[in-house]
Amino acid sequence: MIAAVATLIIGVILGYLGQRSRMCFVGGIRDFILVRDTYLLRGLFAFGLTAWLAFPLVGLVAGARPGPFAVSDAATVLFTVLAGFAVGYFSTLANGCPFRQHVLAAQGVKSSISYLVGFFAGAVIFHSWIERLLLRLLP
Amino acid sequence: MATIAGSASRNSKQAGAVRVTALQLGIVAGIAAVIAGSLLEVRPPDAYGICMACHGRDLLNWTINRIAATHLTIAPASLVFPVLTTIGVLLGAVLGSKTSREFRWSSPDNSLKTFIYGAAVMISALIAGGCSIRLLLRSAAGELLGLIGFGGMIAGVALATLWLRWRATR
Image (tube, rainbow over all chains, first blue to last red; front, side, top):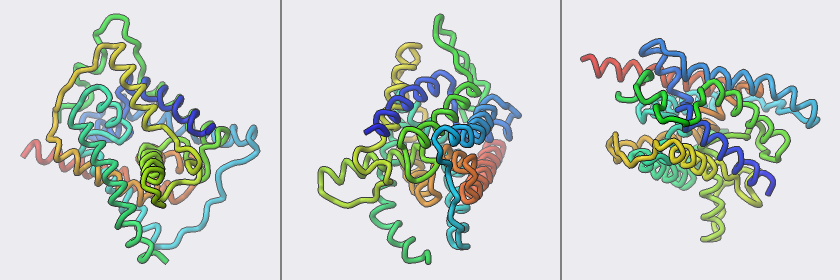
C-alpha cells in the first residue's frame, strides 16, 4: 500500500515536472548527435548522477543497499544488450522515451495515446508468448 | 522530425507558466527513484523506484489478474497493491498542460506506426528489465547488467538518429 501511494505521488510530481521541462530520456542523446544540443542530455546525466550518489546515502539511512547483484550468464547478457538496443532504437523512431510518451498522451497528442495502447498491448504479448519462449532459451 | 530540440515550443510563452528545466527534473527524479526504491517499499527487485515499462506492466497485469483470476507476472513490489507510477505521471502531465494551457488535441504522427513502436518498446524493455529510465537507474545502483542494457540503449538511439538523419537528407 505504501508503494502504491508513494509511486502515485512521485508519478504526479514527475508527470508535472516532465510536462513543464519536456524531459525525454532518449531525446538527449538524439539531440546531441543531431544538433549538439545538451538541454535534455543534462537531464539524463543529472538523473544518473543523482541516483548514483543517492543510493549509498539513502542506504546509510535505510540500512539496505541494492545488490550484490547475481552474476549473469552469456545468454542473459546477449539478450539484455539486444533488448536495450531495441528500446533505444524504437524509442527514437517513436520520437520519445516511454516517459515522454506518457506526458505527450496526457497533453492531448493522439499518436502518443495510440503509442500507449501499443505499449500495454506489448506487455500482454510479452507475457503471453515471448516470456515462455525466453524461459526455454535461457538456461 | 518536428520535435528536434530548439523548437519554438520549448520555452512556454504563456505568462505565469511554471518553468522547469530537464536538469531540475533529472535531479528530482533521481532522488525520488532512490527514496521510493530504498525507503518506500517499491522493492523487490532492487532499483525499481521508477520504471515506465515495468510499473505499467504491473498495474495492467494486477488488474487483469483481479478481473480474470489469471496469474500473469507481477513484480513482488506490486503483489498486494500495484505501483501507480503510470497513473501518477498521466495525472501530473494533465495538470501541467492544463495549468500552462498547453493541452490541445493533436496527432502529429501516424497512429498505427506509434502503436507498433509502443509494443516494440514495451516488449524490448521487459526483456532488458527496464525502460530507458530504469536501465540508467540500475546502472546507478551498480548493476553491471543494467549498465550493459543502458549501453545497448545508447547504441540503439545513436543508430536510429543517424538513420533518421540519413533518411531526411537523402
